[in-house]
Amino acid sequence: MSRTVSSNLNFATAAANAAGDNSIGSLPEWKLDDLYPGMDSALFKTDLTRALPLCCSFAERWRGKLADIAGSPEASEKLCAAVREYEEIEELLGRIMSYAGLLHAGDTTDTARTKFYGDAQDKVTAASSEMLFFTLELNRIDDGLLDKVMSAGPLAHYKPWLEDLRKEKPYQLDDKLEQLFHEKSVTSYSAWNRLFDETIASLRFKVDGKDLGIAETLNLLQGNDGDQRKAAALALGDVLKSRQTTFAHITNTLAKDKEISDRWRGFKDVADSRHLANRIEREVVEALVSAVEGAYPRLSHRFYKWKARQHGVEVMDYWDRNAPLPHSDSRIYRWDEARDIILDAYGDFAKPMADIGKRFFDNPWIDAPVRPGKSPGAFAHPTVPSVHPYLLVNFMGKSRDVMTLAHELGHGVHQVLAGPQGALMSSTPLTLAETASVFGEMLTFRKMLDNAKDKADRKALLAAKVSDMLNTVVRQIAFYSFERKIHIARREGELTPDAINAIWMSVQAESLGPAIRFGAGYETWWAYIPHFIHSPFYVYAYAFGDCLVNSLYGVYQNAAPGFVEKYFALLSAGGTKHHSEVLKPFGLDARDPAFWQIGLKMIEGFIVELEGLEG
Image (cartoon, rainbow, N blue to C red; front, side, top):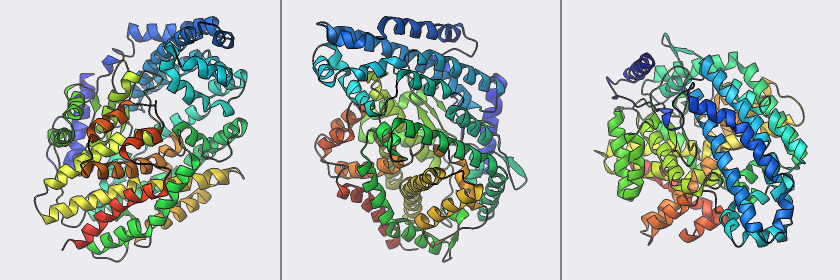
């Protein structure tokens, strides 16, 4: 194990050196001991072994009895006891899969970890299938009777969860079909998800004579060396094209799998199941999409035209889209510098926020080095309320890496604050799940902007921020449009790689505008986007979160009284409140089409400021 840690740190340092830095400091790696001491630990084996008997015992006590209990004089007490027991088992199963999933994310190419993850998934799926009856039976209780029972007594604590659960009622199937769907998930979408992850992690891209993983290759696209950006982009396109048949097969299979599920459950639109999971109305999403698409000319088209001029051309090649400005400071941030910038920014807003964030740095809760086989990108995993979240980043010292760390730490803070709601109610719908992350990122950006040493530094920071905001808003809505087109087209038959490529190119051209030149190789870049595979239609949540935070930040800038307290109440609510309820104290309403223009105008304001800067 010590050799692995040493080699990982050396690999991360080598990546930093390749970016032009001698050292980014000692990067932390997470220790998952707070979940389980190890793959062979007695505690893990015991928990995995007792999961199925616990679930079977629960089923024996409660299956077929909930309707009668609901009509009894002690209904609130008895149903509350059942829900509490269900929650405790969910916590146990969540702990097992959190550990197996995080271990696998640390190296998806390690066959021992892959087997460990697969075996755990098989056993947890078998155990949890015994629990499926519970939520189905709860939803079969007469609405009026359940309203009465959960409005008073101990069950009132779980009223938000029960009300949320009842939104699934129109789409439920009978118990046997639900069990079949659940058990088949291991060999259907979960299996294809795993194949995608392992395939992406195993890909190698030859750039300047070096074999790189996807995280390092994508990182080069943000570097100062134009030749290296081009080489990385072409290598990415070549490798993805060589595997496009596999990625197209995965995409086709998952789209068909979803169509089958949607058809059986009665969902009409391809994205309706995601809207339901997000607890958001379709018309709200449509208003967001319409607002962003209508803003393409004044946001992405305008910015990339400005950026092309900064590079001395009228049209930029696609590999230069995320490049820094010419002659901009390409400084590399050490890990401790990144930590201090973020915690200072959090602390300037609210000391309790910085205090929670500091715990992630003081404890081994972050995995930061780049290493072979590690999941690319970044995420925050909430695990279970009785433990704490873990963060995964691939830190290489760039300003974007600082922003990514600030983003994921925001998720972590949010998850810590929502944890007391318990395993059933701490999870936040995706539309609100991006609030703390994007807000933390904005706080950090403002801190870095305030510390800009001169006009050129400010210009570079603003340009990088606008680029990131466009990637969060415009690009994610374009991703959503791409997914819709793919899933709708798949209903008419299987899509060839060329057909998928054509849809991708049309959406990208529309969203990014005429100042971007798309060359050969870019047509397959859809293939590496994990959200299309893991969470269909997830992507609009990023745009929702960014526009929401821009609006929230505007309220904060106007020194609204009690803002910090209201903000912490929003995060602490977890999944207990609808987006309309948590936004109301701020005077915001996402159902109002004008709401989205507030966030989009902030991005436009940054572009106007950039255009006004000389040089």
